[in-house]
Length: 134
Image 1: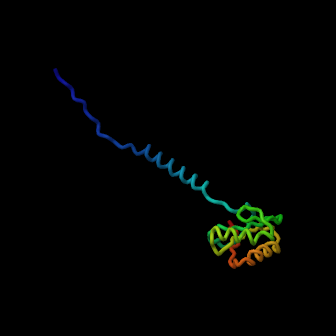
Image 2: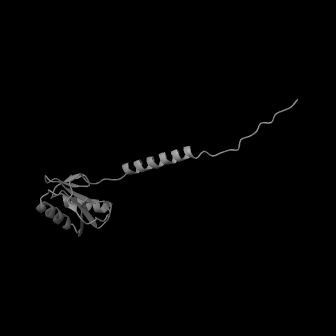
Image 3: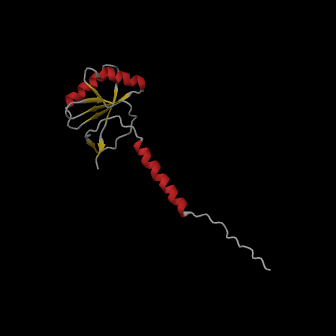
């Protein structure tokens, strides 16, 4: 009686399913990292500029809307309470720059008054947020 021996196939690594899994993981981490970005400001229509804006650390953001509403890191504020709110925010996350996120239709006088209220507590550096023109 003749016993047949099984012929073993050489093992192969299938690369196409591995590429699919890696692509899925890449897309998953890209989308999840976008949802983790921290937005401290309210949505406003920023003025356009031809120069490319430089990124700054944005922990203290003053937002001024077209209708005159003031927000500090999404917290409603007034000109009278703005100084104390900025002082508290600077104690929690010390930095030297306050980012001013003013709507392009906001009154210029209100922007200056808000910056003066912040200067009164000792802040000397401001960054004006703009959008790049396309």
